Length: 133
Image (tube, rainbow, N blue to C red):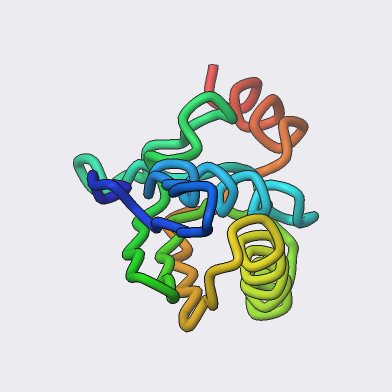
């Protein structure tokens, strides 16, 4: 979901440094995964069910728009059952904004969090399997 493109270019007397949009997406995805309550990134709705992605595919759940000095980020996440979603989303927004701004120098103007699903504890799943047999 990360937009392809050249990303941000920083110029100095020594030359240019280009930050690819994918790099911004990886930073955002990792920062989101650091927040307690986030189970993983989501690849979107597939047949009505959120496809859960592991740490290897962080940019699949991230859409980034990068301008010359600013960035807007959309994150598609799956949360753990029992967390207060509004609080987790606010923590994700703050963590992603801080990480991207510190690492890239871009001003993050938006961090939109799209909750695509809920993951239940493994114990609950095991009990359901035993009852259904």
